[in-house]
Amino acid sequence: MTITRSMIPLPAPAICLALMLATTMTACGAGPEAAAPLPTRPPAATADPWAAHGLPARITIPAIRVDAAIEALDLTGDQKIGVPQAFGNVGWYRQGYRPGEPGRAILSGHLDDSQGRPAVFARLKELQPGDEIKVRYADGTVLAFAAGEQRLVDVNAVDEATWQAIFGASERAELSLITCDGVWDAVAKTYSRRLVVFAAAP
Image (cartoon, rainbow, N blue to C red):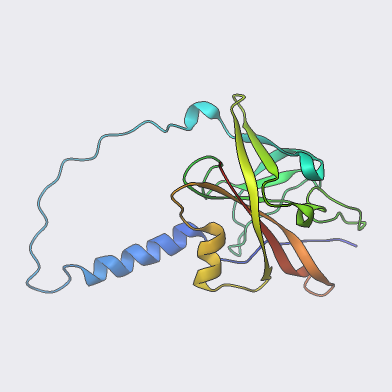
């Protein structure tokens, strides 16, 4: 049985941001009496404070015996987040937030493999509030997080509240750990729900 799973089919943050910006620009100064904008100096380039760390490389969750490599994930052609190529790896959505910066970084993993055997996040629902999660970057920097609440989301959930809760901005560094849950749909080749475990830096 070939399994092709997609995580929550929500719009790309970049697309949502572009739509919001377009709406704002239309509403602000669009009338004939709007003043012409004053010339401004181009903003100075600022160094990326995360560049020296490289990419997130590994995640460990001792409570559920996870010690896995992290793959960088992109959007697929139908605007869904891709999934890790290896069932034992965890995927990081690199068009979103990075683990450790303010915002909700997305880390997803398979529930099981193509033979129905447990995969990297098979025990994700066993996490308890306060359980430790560590993310290591390529340069050796290790960041710690504590597990929090869990949420079950329908696979077709696309409402704004769900999107913000999982993918949205935050004043502190947070993680959204995602895996499959619910009933397997052999026609759609996906599970009916997604389990999201939230975590935050202490």
